[in-house]
Image (cartoon, rainbow, N blue to C red; front, side, top):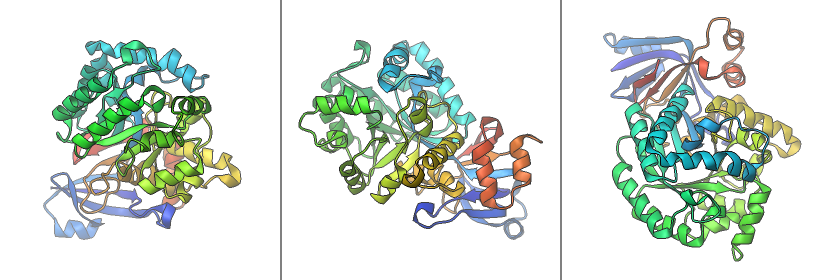
Length: 428
C-alpha cells in the first residue's frame, strides 16, 4: 500500500462529448496491489492512512499512462526515412528491414530497442503490429513480458504484394496465429491481435483465415491499415472488384467490431465512416506519420460526427518517434491546418486522445486510461529539468489546462521522469 502525492491531470469524461479536464492540484492516490483504491485531497487521505509510505511527486505533473494504438515493432531502426510516399517508403525502407527479422537474434535486439522506446516515451499500453515471422513475434512478447508493459500484438500476415519472405498462405496464417495466441494471449498483461498487414497485401482467403482466428481466440483484437494513401486506396479498389469500399474489404469478412482498430483512415468516404461508426470500430490517428509520408490531413470532425471512435498512434517507423505527446501536438496542428473543416483541439482533447480514448479503443477502459478509483496505477510523471523550457512554462502556467498545453507543446522523452504499470515502476 502506497500513497502518492501529486498534481494529477486526467480526462475520465470525454471532452468530445462535453467532458472537462479533471485536475487535482494536491491529490492523494492510495495504491493497493497496483490499483488505485482511493483518490482525494492528500491531507485528508493522509489523515486516514498515517502509516503508509508516501511518494511525493509534486515536483512534476502526474498523468495516466500513455496509450499508443498503432506502432510497428520491426521498424524502430528506420525511423526518419523522410521524403517518400507510402508505397515507395514500404518498398525502399520498411519491407527490407522487416525481412531482416527472419534472423531471431536480430529480432531479439530490435524487440529490446522497441520496448525501450515505448518505456522512454511514457507509453504503458500499446497495440503493436508484430512481425511476419513467428519467432520474431515470440521475441517481442518475451521482451514485453520481461519489462511489464500492457501490449496487444500478433503475427502480421500477407499473401501477395510483398517480398516473398514476408508471404504466407491462409492455412499457415491461421495455424501460426493460433499457436502464438496459445502461448501468449491472456498471459499477464499480454493479448493477441489478428493482424493482416492491409487489404493491399491480403487476399480474401487470408482475410477469411484472420476471421477464423478472431473467432477461435476469444478476447483477441483485430487491427490493420485503411485509407492511408490515395495510391494504396486505388490499388485496393482494383484488387477487390466487388467490394463497396476499402473498409468493406474487412467488413465483408466480419472483421469489424468493438475490438477492431484500423490505422490512418485519412481518405474515408461517408459510407465508410457510417460502417465504422455502426460497428463501433476505432481508428488510430497517426498525425506525424501522415505528415512524414505526405498522406494527408486527418478528417477528425467527420469521424466524430459519424460516431467513429478515435485514438492516437505513433506509427513508428513512418512516424517520427514514440512520443504520444508529440502525436497530440501534431494532431492539434493538423486540425488547425484544416481550417473550418478541422476540429479545434484543446489540451484536454489531446490528453483524452493519448490516454482514455486509447483505453476505450483497446477494450481496457475498466483498467486504464485515467487515474480514478478502481483503475490500475498506470502513470507517467512529467518532471522537466530545472530551467528547461517546459519547466519555465509550467512554473508560469495560469491554469491546469494551460500547464497541460505546455506539456504537449514542449514535452518529450527527457521530461518523463517516472513510469508505472500496475504500480510497478518501470522507469526512474
